[in-house]
Amino acid sequence: MPFLVHGLNYNPHPMKLTIDEVRHVANLARLGLSDDELEAMASQLSTILEYIDKLEEIDTAAIPPTAQVGELADVMQEDEVGPSLPQEAALANAPAREDGYFRVAAIQE
Amino acid sequence: MSVRSAHLDASIADLATRLAGGEVTARQLAEESLARIDARDKPLGAFLRTTPEQALAAADAADAAIKAGIAGPLAGIPMAVKDVLVTEGVETTAGSKILAGFRPPYTATTVRRALGAGALPMGKTNCDEFAMGSSTENSAYGPVHNPWDLGRVPGGSSGGSAVAVAAGETTFALGSDTGGSIRQPAALTGCVGLKPTYGRTSRYGLIAFASSLDHVGTFTRTVADAATVLAAIAGHDAMDSTSAERPVEGMAAGLAEGIRGLRLGVPKEYFVEGMEPGVEAAVKTALDQLEKEGAELIDISLPHTDYGVATYYIIAPAEASSNLARMDGVRFGHSAPDARTVTEQYARARAEGFGAEVKRRIMIGTYALSSGYYDAYYVKAQKVRTLIKQDFDAAFEKVDAIVSATSPTVAFPLGAKTQDPLAMYLNDVLTIPADLAGVPGISVPCGFSEDLPVGLQVIGPSWREDIVFRVAAAYESLNDWGSRVPTALAGAV
Image (cartoon, rainbow over all chains, first blue to last red; front, side, top):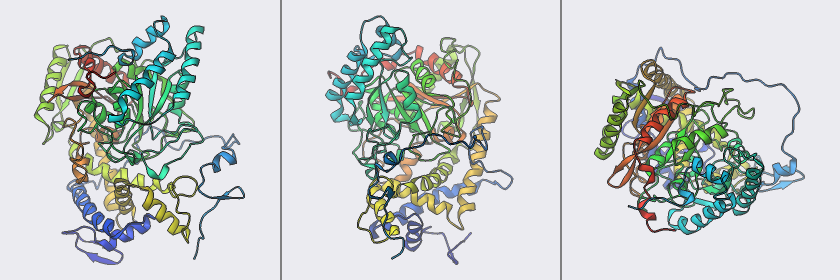
C-alpha cells in the first residue's frame, strides 16, 4: 500500500526511501549527513524498514499499544523546592558560555 | 587447561570471607586489580580509563570499615562501570566522540549505591556508542576483544564490562541492557550477566538510549554474586519515576534450594533458524541436567518471538532519536563553535560527534515518529509489544521460569557483521523479547562450542529475580564452566 509522503504518493518498492526523503528526515533530526552518507543511509534504512514490514503480518486492530511495561503510572511528587545543581556545576561542561548562560549561535541568520 | 587462582579470580562471596578473616586487604585487592588491568587490558581494550586514586581511597575506607565491623556488602570488591553510567568528575563518554571530555556533575544512583556498599571503582569500561550495538565495535574509542579469542568480538553493547569480569580484571561490573546488552556479552565471554525487572534498578544517571527498555544490571563470576550486587544497587529511587517501590530483600533466598518440582518452559521459537549446532547441543545438555535435578521441562510457545527484533528496531530508535536530541553541543559535548546559526551548530556538532550506527538509529527513529509514519511504524510496534508481553504473561501461568540459549551463536570474528546492520540486529533475537516485556533474565555459562563460551538464559516473571537466581544457581552448581581461564590469558599475570 503506498504511503503519503510530503503530499506525494510513492511506491515503497524497490527502495523504501529515496535520497530526498533521507535528507528530509536528517533535517528533522538536525543531523548533518554528507552525500555519501545520504546514499548509504537510503540503502541501509530501506533494508531495515523492509525487514520491519514483517510486522504487517500481524492483525493488531484490537490490540492496545504498550508505551511502557513498568507498573507505575502518573508518579507525582510534592511541589517543593529542593537542592539543585549549582550554576557553576551546570555550566562547567559548556562549550561556550557568557554571563552565566549557555552561549549559542544566532537563532536566525 | 589452566585454572583460576588469584584473588581477582574469586567470587565476591569468597573475597568477603577472606577480607573479614584478614587473609587479604581491600588495598591489596585494589592493587591486584590495577596490576591485572595494566598487564592484561592492552590487547583486550575493556577499559576506557582507570581511576586508581578513587579506587585506592575507597580501598582504605573499606579496610577501615572492615576493621570496625561496619563493612557494606561490597566492601573492598573491585568494580568496573560501563561508560554509560555517569560518574561525578570522572570523564564519561558513552563510547561516543560527542561526549569526549564530559565530566558529569553527579553520579548515577546504581553506581552511588555500589560505592556506598564499599565497592572499589577501578574505572570505566568501553561500550558500543550510546549502547547501540551487539559487538562493542561501534565504540568511537576502538573495539573490545574477546579474551577467549582476540580476533573475536566480546558481544555488546557492554563488551568492556563483560571482559573486565571474564578476564579477571575486576570481580564485578555494572552494565546496561536495552536489547540484550548485558546477557549477550556475558554469554559470549563466559561470565554471569543479569538484567533485572524493569523498574528494579534506577535509571537515574544512565545516559538514556531507550527509556522504556533501558535496564541497569550486573556482570559477575557467579549467580550468588549477581544477587549480592543486585540487592546493593536495586530499590526505589525518587530520581527515576519508573523505579518501583518493591522490597529488594530475599532475592537470594532460594539460591541453595534446588529446582525439584519447578516447571521450566522451553520455548520452541527460541531454537531459531541459524542457531549454531554447538550452541543448541550445549543448551540441550543443560536442559537434560536440569530435568535430572528434578525440574519439569514443559514445551511452551512464545508465538510473537519472531517479531521481537522488528518491534525493537522501531521502539528503541524512536526513543533514542528523542533522547539523543540533548546531544546538541550547547550544554556539554562536542560543539561546532564557528557555525553561523544554531540550526547549523546542531547539525554539525551531531554530524561530527556521532558514529555511523548512532546516526542510523536516529534516522530510523525520526522517520518512524515523523508525520505520516507514526501510526504505521511506532504505534504498530507498540501494539506488537503488547502481544510480546502477553506471550510471557501466558507462559508464566504454566511455568515458573523459561530456559533457552542467550545468543544463537558464539562470539563472531571482528568485522564479520559491521557491513550488515540487519545481521547484527538479528543477533539479539533471543534477548530482545525480555527487554520489551520488562521481565528479568540472566545468562549463565553453559559450556563451550568450538572452544568459545555458550550462555544459558533463564527468564522469570516480573519481580521474580529470586526464581531466576534459583534456576541459574542450580545449573551453575552442576558444572564448573566458570573456573576455566580464557584462552588468550593462558600464562598471563
